[in-house]
Image (cartoon, rainbow, N blue to C red):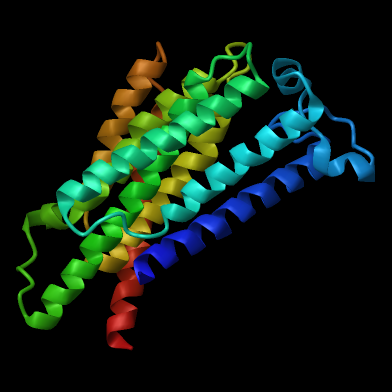
Length: 276
C-alpha cells in the first residue's frame, strides 16, 4: 500500500512540475510550445498560449491548450516515476525500464509531432534516449557503490584489481556515452552550415566538464584508476575519426586530460576523507 502511495505521490509531483515547466516556457518565450514565437503574450493569455501548428492540427485553441498541458503533465509524471526503483530483481528492472523508456519516447514524439509536424523528430528522440541512458547509468553506478559499501562493512571487499580495471568497469558506460554516443547524436541535431554543437559546445564544454566530473566521481569511490582516462581517449579517437575527415588532436587530448584530472582530484578528496 505504501509503495502504491509513493508512486502516486511521485507521479502527481512530477506531473505538476511538468505543467510548471510549461508555464515557465510560456512566460520566457511567449508560447506554450517548446520552441514558440518570440512575442510575449498578454497576462490573461499566458496560460492559454499554444503553438499555431498544434491549434491548426487539433482545430481549436482550447483543445490545443488542454493537450499541451496533458503532454507536459505526462512527461513530468514519467520523470517523477523514474525517481523510485522500478523493481528489485534484475529481470523486472530491465523489463520495466524498457517499458518506461518506450512510454517516455512515445509521449515526447507525440508532443514533438503536434508542435513541429514538418520537423524530423529522430534527432531529438535520440537526444532524449541519450539523456535517459545517462541517468540510468548514474543510478546503476550508485547501486554498485552501495553494494561495495555493504561488502566493505561485512569484510567481503575483494582486493584491488590490476590497474583497477574491475573498479573502472561500471563507469565505462559514462565514457561510452560521453566520448562516442554524445558527439554522434549532436551531429544529427547540428546545423550543417554552422556546426556549433559538435565543434564548439561539445569539445570545449561538454567533453571537459563531463570527463572531469565523471573521473572525479570514480576517483572518490575507487581511488586512482588510470584506465578510465585511457578508455575516454580511445572512444574519442573513434568518434573523431567518424565525425571528421581530418583527425583533430585537441578533442582527444581533452578527452584524456579532463578525466585524468578528475580521477586525480577525486582520489585526493577520497584520501582526505579517510584521513579525516
